[in-house]
Image (cartoon, rainbow, N blue to C red; front, top):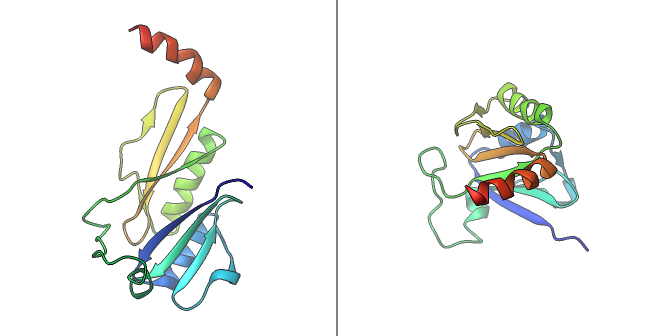
Amino acid sequence: MAKMIFVNLPVTDLARATAFYQAIGAVKNDQFCDDTASCMVFSDTIHAMLLTHEKFMQFSPKKIADAKTSCEVLICVSADSRAEVDDVVGKAERAGGGVDPCPKQDYGFMYGRSFEDPDGHIWEVMWMDVAAANAAQPAAANA
């Protein structure tokens, strides 16, 4: 069985957050949703659990960081092409998210952009040409 990742995110408005993630392409899995949580599926192995603050506090004794003013984590997902990177970030913008809160990255063989959800959580979307990256690596090691 492939390893799975579940990113647990505290959100201030569950309905708004759920709608945002659906707008960028995640699918809501109703089996794991209620009035305190939404399970958003990006792929067979990547899920985001959107949790109300009250629900999130059941899992951690720590204070919930305000993601609009503090950064605890940057979440990065892969894309199949440069166009897909731009498409996902465009969907985030149309759904009310912030666009490119982090600098764009364009190294030729690697391209990435980012967006911020309505609660301030930053997601990076990254495409990489693995063959070109591997070919560039020996040259970088000798520099």
